[in-house]
Image (cartoon, rainbow, N blue to C red; front, side):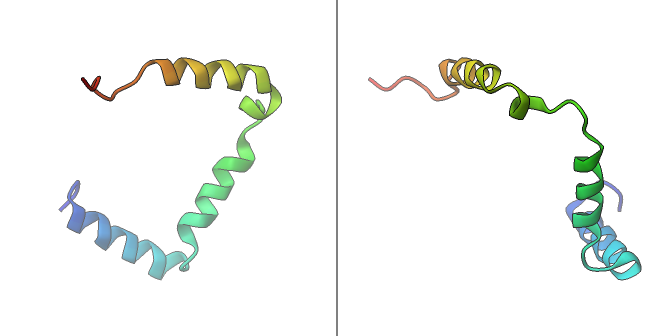
Length: 64
């Protein structure tokens, strides 16, 4: 049942049984440690500008 909610839950259960209950935390940490660019942490002004852009592009409908 690949690609279904039920299949995903079964896969998660199998992964946790095989590799430990912290399986997803471990692979997430591995990905986080591989990053070398610094992202927004390295450039606060860029983060501010990006947030302002995102705020202007509202997905909510206008009321009134």
